[in-house]
Length: 492
Image (cartoon, rainbow, N blue to C red; front, side, top):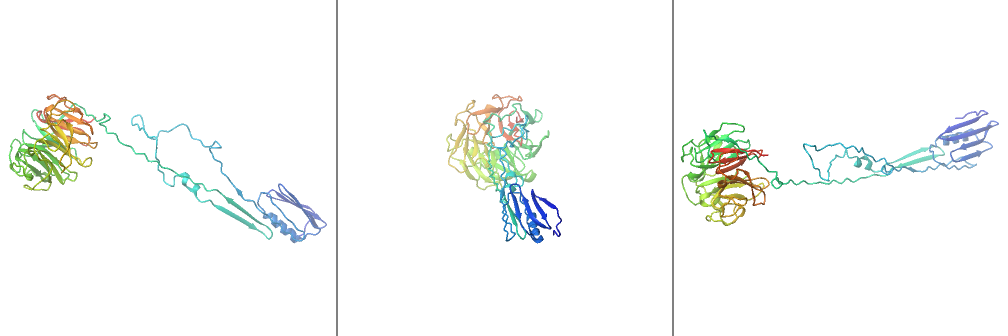
């Protein structure tokens, strides 16, 4: 490698080390080795060129910048180099003052028009690929080993990094929706809009029904013995059952019809009070099929009815529950039943009493099994509302004073239609008080939301109202019987 050595001083610099070889009479007499902290001199009377070659190779393979220890022997030219492991510790950026955020915030949710009163707990869900604290920084510590060797020197360097792991705690906050009735936000415009009926074309409406398309159906009980249908936003209604002005008992006639329901298949059901039956009109047919009661047959057997009033259906439309007013009971029938088939007694049936084991001329009825397993029934003759689990021997009074009529906030006077909502608030048509009362869940104090308590034909008045229904926007529809119209009250 070196060959013939000239008579000169050779300086070799590598990685902050200097090797100095001094030529004397054609041979190297002295080798000086300089490091950062140490100076070594190796003196030999005769150093062959091969020995010099080994030393240069050793120095050229020593790459560590840390302090080195060297051992030499006159009998053998060997150098042992020991490397020191170094580890790097990352400084906490909070201690060094580098943990900073921009103090100018950016609104990402909520506005003046649409405020969002956020909870003190905010839950954020991130995928593993975007969660920085639990990505590669929390992986197992890696170690690398580098070994360089020559005939006389080996150097190893080990680098280790400490493992970093983080635990992310997710807090889930649940929001409970407040009943708007309790907070005072369940309101309607008290000025009604007439959507059906006029002085020239009166509709003395009793029961009303709104289907999933917001189509209105109204029963003309004592005027023309028909059922009207009014499409959403339409102004002209059509007759879908009964013969206009002609009461009767054949399959195309009705006699004092009271209530109406249309199922999801388009079949229509009508309580035909004076004929003591329930008629089913299949898929737009004008001829009804008797599915409960026996035509013109008055009686107390379970296959008979006496003046059926309003009815309600379960969520699957498998059963209907009929307020059998003359028998002071509620009877359940299959919706695919036929005339003469027995129903099932589910409430009352032991006479017109004002106790919690009886019903007194039940008129209105509503069942909403998604909210309650109970039927909500108005006692027309008992001036009260009772909730009753089907098949139970007694119920619980929830509004009015049983057997006592009145016009204050805790009394009713011959109530008729009734509905409950998803909060179990009750809407009761207070017939003889010419008003609609709202009872917040678990409250027996009524709030007047339509009518002003006095009979009249003004936009803010009602005259012996009967039925009640709501559309998809919770606008309220009332069968305003003696005013011969259907009134719509807009939800605020």
